[in-house]
Image (cartoon, rainbow, N blue to C red; front, side, top):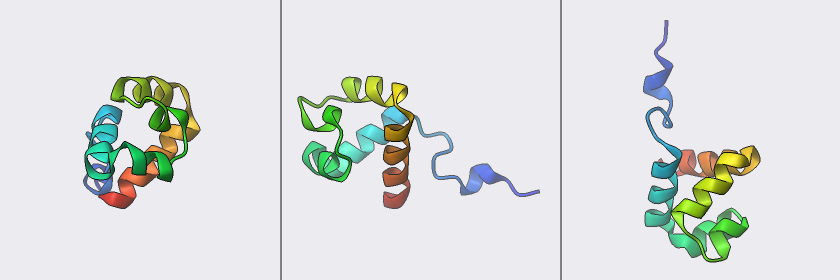
Length: 71
């Protein structure tokens, strides 16, 4: 049996950690350009982004996909 936790780059990574790392790496402007959602482009903050992403599965998927591609 294969341990999928070892191969999953999101294992143990919270949504807050993902957003924070993406902002640290890209900055809000580039993050908003790559994922065009209002919480990244208009008065961005980690708190407002988390609130939106937790309620919007398609947006969370885009953030997770971008995070995976940069890991």
